Image 1: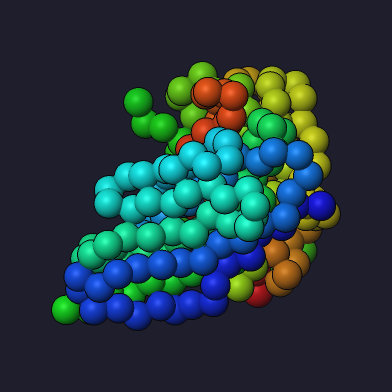
Image 2 (image 1 turned 45 degrees about the horizontal axis):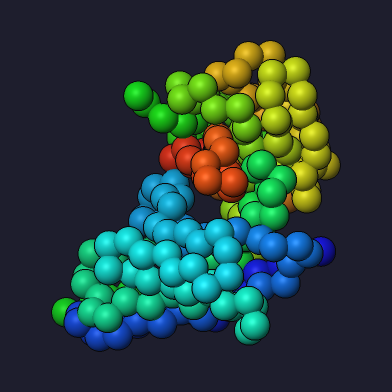
Length: 112
Length: 114
């Protein structure tokens, strides 16, 4: 079956530091890959996506590249801000319409 | 557009009570889903629907019922609440875009069963 593995949190960084959150997956077929962000007390919002190998998704300074050879979709940002503090979820979808498989989430805390 | 709305935001139930979590979307999305979020486990799919009148089970369906009589509404029913159902519940709707399905989530319902 499908599964997503994310690095354990919490991750604590100083403002303007470089961020990497690792995500690897196991899937049948050719999944689409997503990063969702959850701010405190809110629902999940789509942050970025990639639908085929070597695609790079990007949004709000965050980037992730779909690496089929390493089955990875690591999230990166060059300079984090306090406002980036949230929980980040990696997820995949294999064409089932609304069947997302999520990782366990990684909490990011950014301090001044 | 209001997007995906969920009511109530918070609920406390006693073991054995029943209740319905409401979910509505105004985007005319064909697909709707219910997930539960538990610490250290991410989100897990409970039930989903691919259109009015059509529902199916997800990963953790036991103890929950759903129906989809209209495109807009997708209520989740707990028939006899148990402490193991203490969780945060998210409803989502989705549509097909560029050969994949983009999901929109509601703000969640935090349920405590005592």
